[in-house]
Length: 251
Image (cartoon, rainbow, N blue to C red; front, side):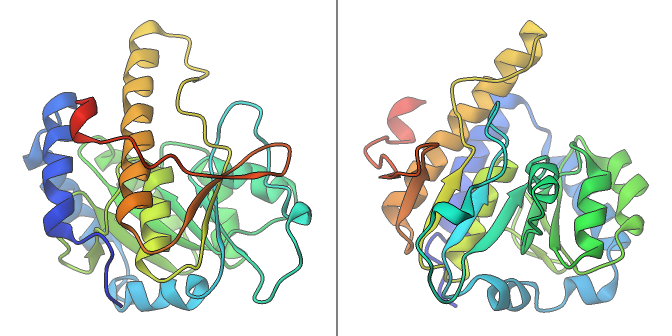
């Protein structure tokens, strides 16, 4: 596999994210070491190949958790072979399961309804667990409870069997992953970059700042990646993702 967005080109973007949000890199490293210790050996072997086996050559529906989005209406898509693959971003897993949809892949930093992710993992979802400086305790609490196929990721250079193919939030990491392993198209369902259900003003401002990064980073992927990227609207239409946004010019 030839990555569309290489780590060397991705790293400067994450350096700016760390600076904006004040993420200490030593805590990122501590989380990486913790996850590498907690994951079973099989989870650290051939992760990209295992993910590619689920996504390569298929449309990838990346499911987000925008307010009132619900599960993706896959019945609105034209019948095709091979069928599309679902990638759920963290809490969107619950919406998928409620509709009887088992994601092929879940990307999560374990800050959502983890029990749903464990249930999906038991039913066949490959879960990519992301380590960062704020989820050390959650990693220790939950990683050993996943019974099925796993992989790991973190914010630094790929090592210790952990991936980094680009992306910041669970949703845009899923899009970057799908592009990296050869999905034919990326369809973004349940993505909203200007609204959040956070009520605390400080938490709301922080969440909106993260969503702005997600918006711009997906724009970067749409310009430089291999797979055409679309917003899947509630009316069933597919809108090409806006590629005119420059990450550099918006910061």
